[in-house]
Amino acid sequence: MADQATHAQPSPVDGQTRRDFLLYATSALGVAGTGIALWPFVHSMNPAADTLALSTTDVDLSSIQAGQSVTVVWQGKPVFVRHRTAEEISAAVKDDGADMREPQKDATRVKKAEWLILVGVCTHLGCVPLGQKAADPKGDFGGWFCPCHGSHYDTSGRIRKGPAPLNLPVPPYAFTGDTAIRIG
Image (tube, rainbow, N blue to C red):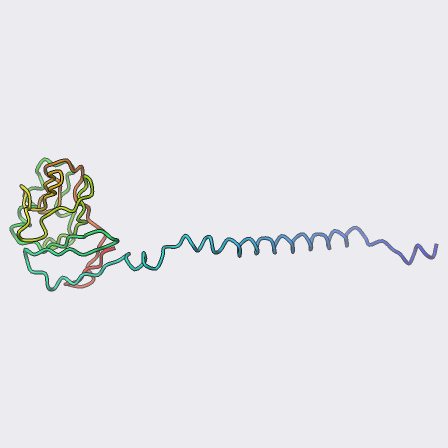
């Protein structure tokens, strides 16, 4: 009987405590290992550095004269920046009440009336409309003309004639100074 006293069994409470600790420690290590293994996969979903570089485009407006247009690239798409003349602005405002496929007032398409910023991609099949150069045809409404299928845009970039279903889109942009904008 003395032999039995020296080999005392651990109490069930002590066994459960040790088992619980091992279970929690193993679970924590499993979760940490899974997180470490998944991190490269999650990180690969972030945009690439070249994509982030294209996310914004800064444009200096100081050299663009009234009546002149320039084309810049933002996210691989042409963006038309036009310094509109008083005549172009008044024509756009006058046409606010015209019958249009996608009615929009000129004031909702610009932040400053003299500057019109548009994504220069025809909403019909993705062509680049003409009208940026002085010698280009500007269509029946004095804005842009897509010769591929005959879409005509007015001086606010609104579709007025032809197969294009929507106006030329206005990209997100903000004035960063009196003569500078940031697109994107």
